[in-house]
Length: 317
Image 1 (cartoon, rainbow, N blue to C red):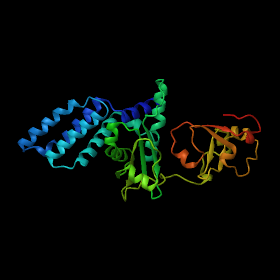
Image 2: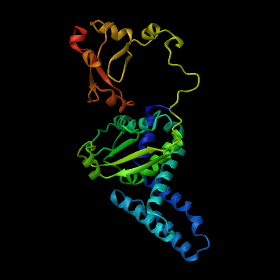
Image 3: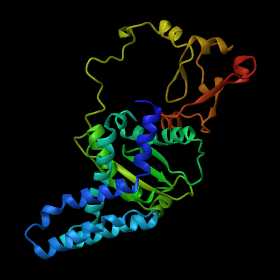
Image 4: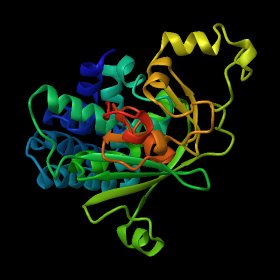
């Protein structure tokens, strides 16, 4: 697993090919085939619908409308809820991508929140590799934890098919990668504006992800792990020499630990309590130096520089 394979896998997940869309639709319809066996008229209509899968090779809104229309027609014939088939379509879409890239997708993030927040950095890496620049219409993801423990997922400038599949796709990702059972609800922009939760004026979709009760078993520490410094395999001083440019800080952005290289660059008294903002500034990405902002970009390379007043010399990246 490397950045290239990670980026390519996320690209397939966020910009599916017409072939993948057709395959997803066929698998979704096949799932419901057993429900029409024995009903001749329904079976005939069902297979007529299946034959329309070849129409899903256009692009943009027409593509999404074609898929939506086929599923709506099938739902009417079978007496099912359209939302149920839409969710199944999303699950099958993720399953196809997962079957092709399981090892890579499992490496994107340690939690469902990290999984989605890692998309932007990986997509940017792929764009850079091919000499392309991000545009104002490039898809982007932001997943935040709400006070009650739920997740709010923002999907900006969504691909029409991926946006349509997002609820089922999210459920499948939670179950297959993190063994979580979740409920996913799409939130309207009107509701976000009323609650003051809308992150901006750009077009996008927003989802609330709720973990089901009794499913929260993944947050416990692994067996045999310890939070006691005395149990470390190497001393902190040895670690700081081995990794001279590492930096650790707490949720209040207080510096907890510095590698020897950084310690030498900082001319201030490193034995007193230091704030990250007093010693460093973030060059890229362009985000404020808060713990929450850093957590939202765990897969993004950060460039920081020592502050002039902290280093006593010219700024160093």
